Length: 227
Ligand code: CA
Image (cartoon, rainbow, N blue to C red; front, side, top):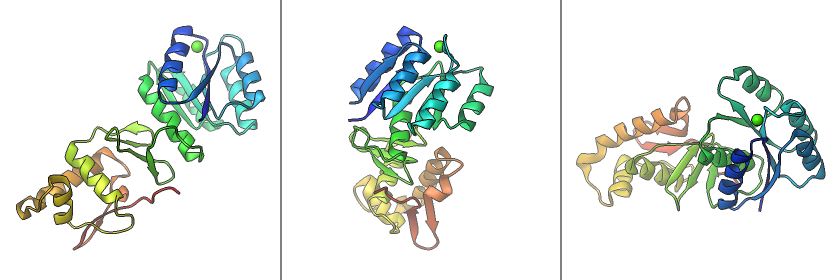
């Protein structure tokens, strides 16, 4: 089980994040001030820090630098207007950030993606590819790219998982039709191309490298499954 330390002075947000993280199977520690946050990081119990940069007592960036020192990954929470904070946060080593107001679901996914990239097991059963950039959660029929949920149609989901099932191998259009429709229907082959096009669009700007075209043969997943 991974432990997430939530450093956030607003109680409602802290409780909301705790609830969502616990529901996903994480152990959660909380700190209401930067000083408490630094102490908790130094205690070494956190696998990841979810850090509000706008804290009342110390500069959030101070907490960030302590976490960096202890090699604990950080997902920063910033105000939507605080573009400078986001840039500074990423420059100073935050692994990712989410702007307020946020969807708690998105925060949880980003936490999972960062932990997966760091090689810490995520509590759910998502498969990851390309160093954690692509995650497939088959029980939820959910795909994420860089922590953001892809809004896929059932056909696009079917194509993506069919390609993922054959690592390194090419799937012909007819095989993909068979997978997503359950039968082989030659007339449907051409429409696979437009589904792939839409899928790539949702993976932009990396679409063409995630779903590779193999001329004259079909398609192949361009990212490797993580060990
Ligand atoms: Ca705050």
